[in-house]
Length: 325
Image 1 (cartoon, rainbow, N blue to C red):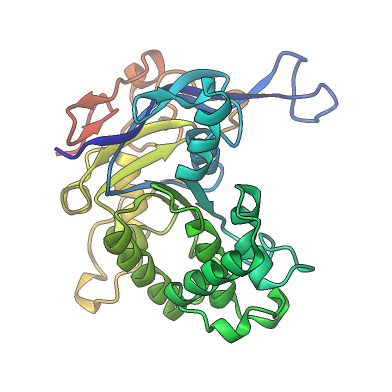
Image 2 (image 1 turned 120 degrees about the vertical axis):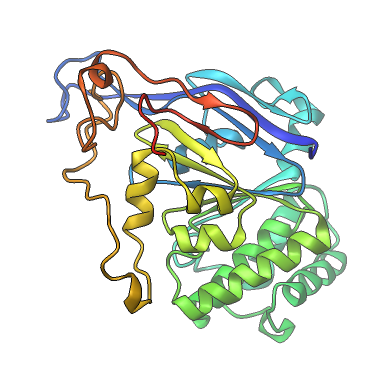
């Protein structure tokens, strides 16, 4: 069993909804983006977080590195609650945890040169000597697959894949232990996605990195992850190792996600698929009991009356009254 680097317990993030919002029924309405989640991230592993858009994946990722404040719960990084860190401890955590954003076009300041974009975290954390800083930037560019002679260029002079490599180099600048990859390859062409994924894996081996990999693409997740957490409407509904989870999903929602992935095999065209209709319910007023019941083809009265608990062990678990066999 790998040592735990970061764990979240009872994490909640609620957003107050203004009465001016057309979808709010009363002033006390809140969006339950993350609603009571426990998650464990072992050191040196890649934990994947998957689910449809709007399920709260990115919010959970930001909670786990304290980019946003929780409504409730705790997150322990190497045994210390990150929400109560002060002074040197907080600064040390900021160096140990980093993030790669989804959109390489929007996450880079268009008015800054690449050497300054990558070197900004170094400057912020005390590396004032420009020669030393730019030497480190050149090293980061090289290991991220960028030519060092491009250091004086601006972001608009790069392709999408190159910009994401800039984001990776910037995330690596302070030698972090944990990197949150928030849909880090979703905006890229498939061939470029493969290059970036291979880069991330090689960097993980070289620098003993730990990843929280957020994605909606299950084929990408299968390739890179050690454990997969499936999220629906602010809740974790299932988790397990990719091989077992993909071969034999227990939660109907996981089965739905897997059946939605195209398989380039003519012999599989007539395979039985689980068809789920309807849209994700509102996070302001989620369904009672099981939140997936309004779209689940096997839902019964018990599903509306009682919320299923996440039952299992440290290896796998499922939150369903009637798990699939």
